[in-house]
Amino acid sequence: MSAFSESEIEAAKRRVQEMRNKANKYAPSEPNGAAIPEQTPPKNSGENAEKQEASAEKGEVGEENSFALIMTLILILSKENADSKLILALLYLLL
Image (cartoon, rainbow, N blue to C red; front, top):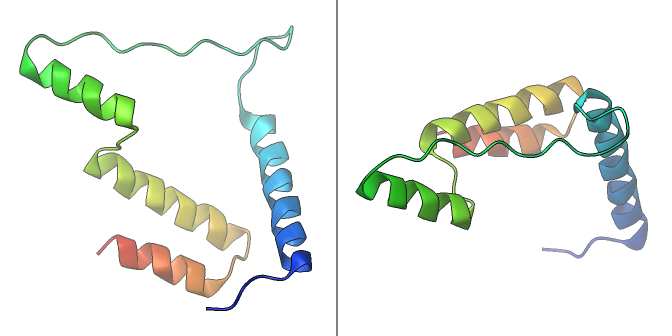
């Protein structure tokens, strides 16, 4: 596997910044610029609640959520004319 050149890294950074700027257009925010606080889900009782809290702390995503996330990424990347190898790799993850 070859290393990326400096120009490729800079181009990737530029694309990330462009995508962040596009995403910020759609993200809700307060008129004064303050971020909207995160909503906490209601607490479940018993062992199930402990498992959900532990997985939330680790940043784990459920199987259904991962499928939706990957499909969303595929749709966005295909509309942005991303590299077909990347889209195929994401499709492979869904198998």
